Image (cartoon, rainbow, N blue to C red):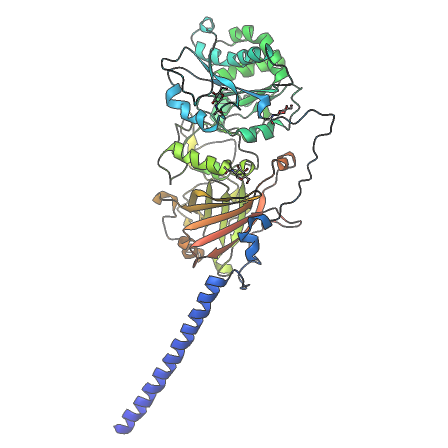
Length: 504
Ligand SMILES: *[C@@H]1O[C@H](CO)[C@@H](O)[C@H](O)[C@H]1NC(C)=O
Ligand SMILES: *[C@@H]1O[C@H](CO)[C@@H](O)[C@H](O)[C@H]1NC(C)=O
Ligand SMILES: *[C@@H]1O[C@H](CO)[C@@H](O)[C@H](O)[C@H]1NC(C)=O
């Protein structure tokens, strides 16, 4: 018995000893891991990208390539700037108060030129924060849809106002919009700089909903998204507008009338994908999270869609958040970058898609760039609220057969740093349960992705001159810190030979 007891106790001793050793080993490993977790910035763990601390924490060290776009030759006129653009917004005295917040978001008092064109004198004193107004000409002679004719005619009224006082060199473009159009002026300037303002141009975009383009025209710039008419085109238009409005008095909208008149002059629409009529219903998230590689110029119909950020209470707060990022780096707003995070090995690769200044999506599996650049269909068509078609491809948000196709969604929290050459923006998990994968997806990346609650994006400021080159998406790389709760994304210009190739 004793022997056995002895034997068993020595066995017990050995077991204790072994478990103590194991404990010690575990503790030591923990300590080392803790050390690594806290000080890993200096250490090159095998699964981390070669990412020196200085490159990420000192935004000034993020390399900025010298743009190769050539400055205009000395003989050509100075580049177009904001003071060369006159805005003409179609408004009405009755609805102005409900909608003025949209214009106040973007209009720079005493810098932006132009007017809101009202149908009658406003009943209350005009607020100081608002752009100046004018009363547009009576259009009742144009029949039962006279309001549309009145608004179509403001392009001519704006032209006449300018041509009687300022010359062609001072004003190069007339930009039409609605009283609920939100313009991104710096980007509009960059877009218009691409065109020779001494030629006749009509620049904008048709509707996103094919049914709308079929009913109206693919060749028409939808007015709520705004469109630009060069000075010589406006001059020609002014010459024929009166008779033209008579001829098309039974048309539906003001934008359709303008297009019909421009068609008489033979001036076609030049497409610029940054203008957005937003002819969709529901949630425009998918569109904003996968913007084409082009500067964001306008948004519209924001009273008719869900607030753009689930982490803000109102549409206006969501837009203010978007503008807080836009103001530090106008050219980069909504620009996508894709990268793959393989922090815990190849079997748990996450796909990360950034729409800069707005949202980050983290997928628990590998999606190729051609999928990530296709908007998630969070919206329906404008007229019939149907599933499509749109003028771009979409992919379903909730595929019940594949819950791993659904991303974890993050919205912009705030701009953390605005340096001369670089920015740091922070995004937090959407507070809306609908923005998270519902079913637990079987991929190993799911638990890794579900742990992330903040994303920090480091990006060089984008030089607007880059928009004069062929558009190209930027590259990025990631790492996880804070025990996997923080995902850091560093956006950078792609190196020669670099591609965003999905890992196998
Ligand atoms: C815009 O360019 C003109 C030259 O055409 C220049 O005189 C003017 O100062 C510029 N305005 C701004 C705001 O930069
Ligand atoms: C704009 O100009 C007006 C008159 O010149 C001036 O009273 C007002 O303070 C200016 N507003 C801003 C925001 O600069
Ligand atoms: C961001 O930083 C730049 C350069 O330091 C500065 O000119 C600009 O006004 C800043 N913008 C905002 C919105 O803070």
